[in-house]
Length: 207
Image (cartoon, rainbow, N blue to C red; front, side, top):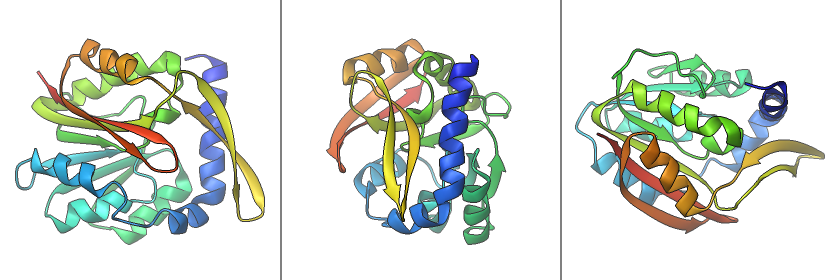
């Protein structure tokens, strides 16, 4: 892990800590990405244990709990952790770096990484995917999504009256599929959606 990469992560987490309340209100629509979430859940068994990797304010955690899944969520933002923990005390919300999830091997039945891996520096994604592979049970399910592109960028967006910066890594569908397969997963399917920009979602299984 280089200092340059850590600076990108620190900047992004600092922004999320500062905008957590506003962000939670802006992105509270549980119907957003519902088709992908429903398909993900259709691949699971009752009461499976799901890890929400980069859970943010916990929007998806609520849906998972409603359907009687066991849920653990991790995030690096203290503000997001506080919001999610208050909303969903039934879930186990922990402060962890999603690049290095601190769990035993074969621990989770499924991992849900919705719009979170895009904040992992490009040079660290391969190792991050390998770390995720380790904590999923054999035949377990892995979902991830990100904005389509071919580079990395620092994006500024207005939250309230202040412009805040976040780091984003982007990939083509072909490049990301190759990384998923290289990490040991089998791709079940990929879907392309448009939410303010083009997004790509991948459903994979540990083999």
